Image 1 (cartoon, rainbow over the protein chains, first blue to last red):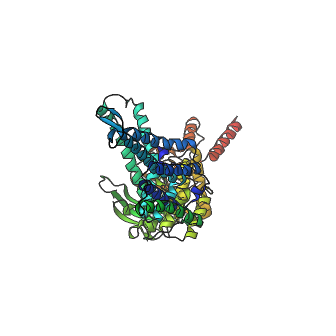
Image 2: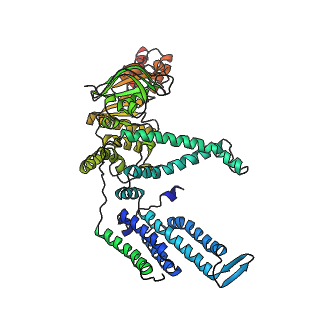
Image 3: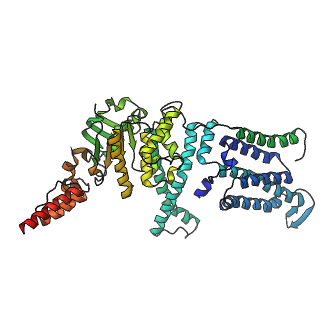
Length: 262
Length: 287
């Protein structure tokens, strides 16, 4: 669970070295591009490009598989379910009672699955190559209020601790004889109250201690705070941003100005 | 000028049915290292938070009496102003580290005070070197050991350049090695950097040899203050207020029951060894 929150792995690749703001903007542009493209072929090309970037991020195979298996399951589900609920078009490939499986619907299923794959995997590039610290720092530099940035940072920082607390409480309750897997849904849900109450109390205590720690370190003392580390855009950052912008603008203009079906 | 001067202070938290501090008068000289000793609920944490201004500014509390830190009334200035004079470190290191890297953690205070970037960088390196975490700048705090986390919390306070450091049960969650490292660091801060140090704790085992003075608290009252030998040598007065006596004085107590030669006074193993050596010498002469 904690691994899903932080997929970052330290490496020295050009993707790791890019300014986090460039990575955020690039990921947003590539996500929008996935909506601009409407044919299966163009989406597969985009997906291949994203996979190439994932490969270049040099994330370990186990980490990549950990992240991708959720997307692959979801994509498979879309491919299977889409033709069942969308019966528009001809030719009809099969009829199963009231369900008609048509050829265009099958392709639409593949297209949607490819789009979902692009949208998910492009964000993995950001998560694989950008530390949470840089991500929050970039968001603050892009205009997010420091308070909100700090809130995100604290949430990311304490999420693993909170999960560890929950697992400890579950283990402690099991040691006292509470069996979470027995009984019906309502009975099982009630048993989790014995986990939730101490977990919430623990979280509130942590929050209380945190607020004191923040105040004792002059949080909010000055209207404008200074920052030890500043983000600086380099030539390679501008170049990367220009390439991704071009990748977005060219298909966008082709589709909406010259009405090319891509 | 006193580092801390409390005169007839009574404090009661909002909604509480009894005073957390009751007519406490207490002073700490600049450069002094003091152990505030007492059982749970003795009022140690309240006194610590009063010294830093967290009470009454962050925690609502009814206050009587006067409290001054370095000649400044605590009620007249916000916590941020106090934090540049009095730094505070809490019991649980985990709950006071909220940044994503060691460097950010230490820089957080000076950044809030809008200190220049170059100076923040200097302060960070200085504080990390003092606490023995130099080179850990990019490490996430969660990857550190308990002792290292507590030292990081101290570095985070030190980077605000306080004149006094208040530590509320800093050794509570630490293993024996972590405790020894912590007290060695605090002694170093006092001796080499002239910092005034106030440590609140439930036992005096490791602190006994480091501090200049011990203040004994019980049920919100200041019971006694004195040198470690004066306060810690006899076990019974400590037991009576729920504080575990030093192992050395418990051993003297046990030895004293066997042979009358042993008297309370030693608070270190070396001093006790001296007493035992003398006793053995006398026994040899008698024979």
